[in-house]
Length: 182
Length: 286
Image 1 (tube, rainbow over the protein chains, first blue to last red):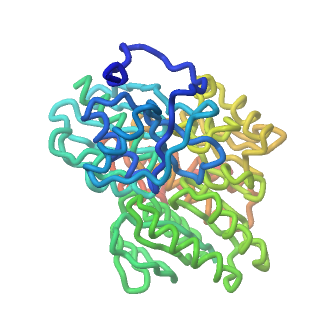
Image 2: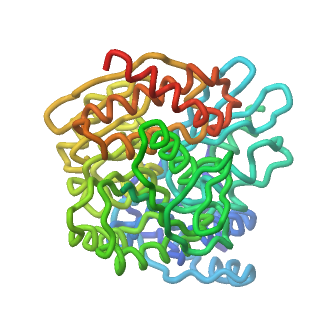
Image 3: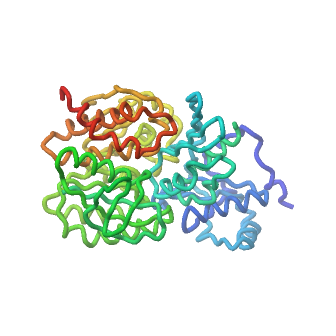
């Protein structure tokens, strides 16, 4: 019945950032839960977006998931099947902060660096080995660097699987961009 | 004495505090060994190398394991909010902690009761929390890179991930971003901005810039901001003025690149090894 909600937006379609009465946000206890929920919902075909929370519920390192409000029950069901429980569901009443969607690529000759927001990942072109991860300030960044540097893009664990913070999420975006272009 | 607060990327590392030593390529604190990769261990190693060159100070660290879940950071916040007033530091540097505005405020409140009040430096996650809580002006130094400066300049962004595009696009105009960060009271007394050209600024002006030596590859190396903050943490506890300490730290951090001959694959520990030579070079004509 509400199958149209599942349709993804056409490529290049930009969000105006204005609040929409038919959208809600799922609030989770921590960013790891958000990353996990986003994976589950996107795999199930839902049109959801990771956004910044409204100021009244910001604590410091937050993400929320914006979703079509009328689909709340179905979305809760999808999440419950993956054992994920949102803390609360709130209608969107004010513009949400949009994550940075700007990628910068720098070619060092034998190496290629991609930056997403405050995170950078650099690989050797010859063997696609990750040689450095830089930027960021959340505690999962040194951990992600420890686990990923020295491995190839194919071998390395994905930031979305190990990361827990916005810096980890930004690194996942840089990783995805590298996978796209390499 | 210099105090450093931060996390290590090991979920099983407990909260420890005490004097920290650098032996070979490892840090030793409270009988535990920590590999120097990046993050707070890199900051500490850079500070220890700098202190070794200058004959002090002693460095005391507060560390907990945290891989981004925030558990180790919360233990540290809780401990510091309660115990910090019992310590005395000339300089206190806060580094990789899970940003949390409420806990930040409790820790800052504890700092305000310390006598004498230490020179305060915030970098990485704790700088994000300081900005978000609206207390940036309580700090003596922030040490952002250009991307983080754009975040400080964006009065509504709670994290660099949400810096608005029209501000992020101004990253070539660092003086304007600095002005904007001060305009919205989101900057410390001094900003030390690391980039293609480093900037040392206060509310009134850009005090100095450093652009040589310059190595493109340094941008890719994880931890070059940590080393800058580590060197600065030691130098600003000495007899230099804050701006001169920042200038010398920025110069020395760049000279580590000269001696390490970096490529984008160079690891930060290779840069840290060269700090004594880099400091010596940076001091010439200073």
